[in-house]
Amino acid sequence: MSLGAASGDLPGTGGGNGAVPGGELSRPSVAMTSQQRLRPSPNKDHTPDSYDDLQLDFSPAIFSSLERYLPSTMLGVSRDDKVKFMRGILLKYLPHGERNRAQRHREYRQKIISNYQPLHRDIYIMHPSAFFVPTFLKAINDNTEESLRNIMSEPSPGVFTFEMFQPQFCELLLSEVKNFEQWVNEVRFRIMRPNTMNKYGAVLDDFGLETMLDKLMEQFVRPISKVFFHEVGGSTLDSHHGFVVEYGNDRDVDLGFHVDDSEVTLNVCLGKQFSGGELFFRGTRCDKHVNTGTHSEEIFDYSHVPGRAVLHRGRHRHGARATTSGHRINLLLWCRSSMFREMKKYQKDFSSWCGECLREKKERQQQSVVATRSELLRREGESKA
Ligand SMILES: O=C(O)CCC(=O)C(=O)O
Ligand SMILES: [Fe+2]
Image (cartoon, rainbow, N blue to C red; front, side, top):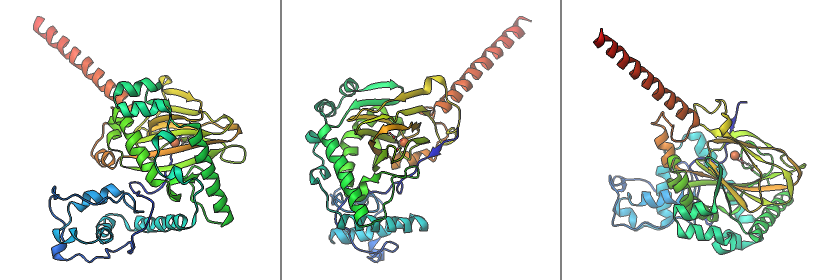
């Protein structure tokens, strides 16, 4: 079985929802003069603005970090002007095709956000006590490996499951998604699907939930990933792609074998009633080994339960079996680490997380033990002779 790599939005991009600072995409709107060169080292005394509330094509955190490198003449200008200036710099590093894609996607989101009327505004802002079950909240607040282990089960290595959302929150999110889809149909808006593998479902980031989902990643997924997925950038997750997938007779039926475009994936079943739809896992692999065989200990099937989350590495190969009756809707948060992706470019051995790299490494070690042993025996034989 050859497997797909599901891809979603623009990797490494993301931002908040809200006002869109003006300015065209391809060129800095604030001209760069010689006094406006970036500083060679960051200004540690400067406290940068927050860019969390803006709809941007790069993560707001990147803008805050870059602001420390701005020339002193730029520090006094308005936040919008700083954004224009910094976007101009960042865009130079995107290939041309991606720049156009980024622009089109930004316009698409802008169109939705300025026209769609949310049904439940409460879910657009992170309210931990209203969203999460108390056991989950307590474990996060205690923030120790033990408190997290206490609420988790790890039925197969690298697959963690735990109670996460309150039923009431699942219902509100389901009805918001339904309302958005009704609006899309009414106004005959062309909807972009979550990834290359789904014909149904919706991107939550596209209709205003991006800021809330950023908080979900930063405050809830990252602390868990830091403990359990440190080796794949779990502590440096800095962007996400958030969406819902929908299965049933009149929706997508199943999902093929694939890896996600994420370092860590949070998958929470929102409901409703269904049978089938099990997730099947088949071991974690790097790019080079993605199509290698599965070992029996890597085979694991999981049945979704509403409100319950599954957390796994994006590179953990998986798929979803047919939902044979009813409707199944799941929230997916593909969490990415730009730092991990950058570091990965310079590495070849991923034995800390790739099952096949690990097998090869052990084989090399075994061979070297055998070679050393036979060399010692040979020398012993020589000295006796
Ligand atoms: O249907 C599911 O639960 C799995 C979805 C999934 O793996 C994905 O969208 O990447
Ligand atoms: Fe997936």
